[in-house]
Amino acid sequence: MALRQPTLRGARSGPGAAPAWPGARTCRLGRALRVSVRAQAPPFLPDAAPAAPAAAEPETVAKPAQPACAYEKALMLQAFGWDSWKKGEGNWYGKVKEAIPDIKALGATHVWLPPPSHSVSAEGYLPGQLYDLESKYGNEDQLRDLCTALKQAGILPMADIVINHRCADEKQDGVYNKFKDHTDHVGSSIEWGRWAITANDPVFKGKGNPDTGDDFHAAPDLDHTNPDLRAALKDWLNWLAADIGFAGWRFDFVRGYAPNFVGEYIDATLGGDTLHVGELWTDVAWNGENLEYDQNASRQRLCDWINGAEKRACAFDFTTKAVLQEATKRCQYDRLRDGEGKAPGLLGWWPGKAVTFLENHDTGSTQQHWPFPSEFVGTGYAYLLTHPGIPCVFWDHVTTWGPELKDAVLALAALRRRAGVDAESKLEILAADPDLYVARVADRVLVKLGPRMELGELQPGDDWSFVLSGKDWAVWEKTA
Image 1: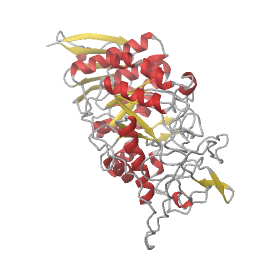
Image 2: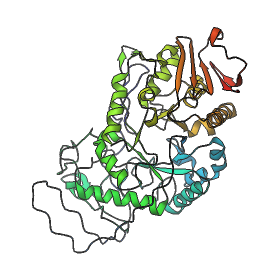
Image 3: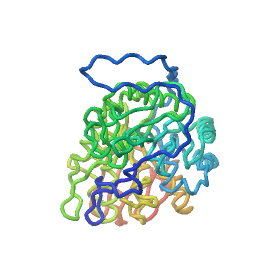
Image 4: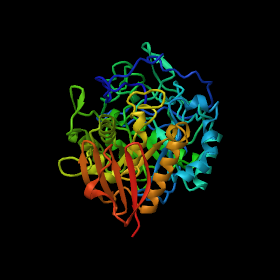
């Protein structure tokens, strides 16, 4: 998600206040009106008498069949950066489709695509007309074609789902808070009134129930406690899966609404047996300019969110990102083992639900809100791609950072597959000193990080074969 800065002191980060966005308080969709014959859903008042039914029942959206895809061996690719909509020249989807041979060579099983709906912001994170899939990334036909091509190549497309908020079309009481439904579609109407906005939204004068999460200042926060609103969102999600071809969800800004709703949306659509992931940008603990070694509170919040979503979704491991980039930047590799001998992030507590990453469209790309130190990106991938968890590779790193990094990432991903490393593989941390980290994974991979060259008793023996190395990292594979 964009539109917010991490809370920084010096070079450190966590989520916080959003930067000013041009027109953020006036989220208006300048779209031509199209035919819509559905009635607006009634307000949700828990203690009120039920509203009269609409004159006609809307057509129902068929629930798509669940894809058969255990995700323990998943490798994600985020297939866009912050300014990809510019680079695509109106058809970013076509660029991704052209790259499918390279995506297959990487071994990616899941490709995370940008928000699909028309949006006030070109990047997609201020959606309005959810069913209008003509965006700066391309049109509906191009998106459907990409999803089909990915699935034919054995790769599952994941949609970036932005449902914490929605930009309205018309003003009432001086602010945009009336939603129209400009696109003809099956399923429930998305022509909503102020009842769809949380009552305590500080800007958009909603009349729904209180928010169940953090406020998002740039657009009206949606009231997910409203059953009619949830039904409409489920219809939209099922349409994205059944008609467009998506096979997984990446939920944006999940700190904005309660996690149980994520579990409900998954159960009502693709089910929890396929890969879904939530963006819960957690705060990490600092002592002045120094990252604290104990980050249990940060990863506990990730665990709590996963449990709150009924374990239906994974979470991006922001804790591991924080620790790993400080370890590499400051030569503090002793950070990579906690007090119990485990990995220090969500990866150490719940690896099967940890989506590990170095960078995304917010932290890096052209935004650079919280970038991984560029000289150690190879070191970071040596950690991610040899360790448990579900690694997510960033598009820019394998497309624009040059052949050396791309070749290293591909070789590390190939080693991961060869050695059978998956989300739940056994991790043995053999050394964690300031200048040296050594771990054995799945009894098949040995990885060394840090500038120290002398490994002493940890030097691999004749039953290990050197695979490749880079700045402050090296990996070996078991041969016997």
